[in-house]
Image (tube, rainbow, N blue to C red; front, side, top):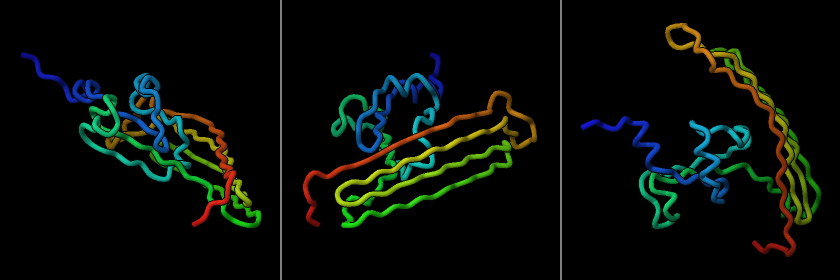
Length: 157
């Protein structure tokens, strides 16, 4: 009798992936392993993980668990005046001589808010603990994103 490898057990138990609580098509996630960053890492506020079967709450897609990726949200809509905020982030990684940069502009007021961002990332092959270069571990991407909300009625807190 042949034993299953750890990877076979993981791949045979599908996880449900949610982004901001909305179900994502599992076909997207099964094409790439590990999960390809289709969301810019600078816009992730937190990641919630529910281990084990969760199909009672989420349906049959959640036999292996649930991964809920919560993104940052602008919070200017409830202000009575217009307000804006901007920021830039830069990160350097010495293990793969990589860099990451992001610029974000957000603002709003009077029931409307928005967040606009642009980022870039470039990483070379990294070195393992022994100092050997790991071939084909380089990574590049650019991302642009936009998120907005409009409240048609006044929210009473």
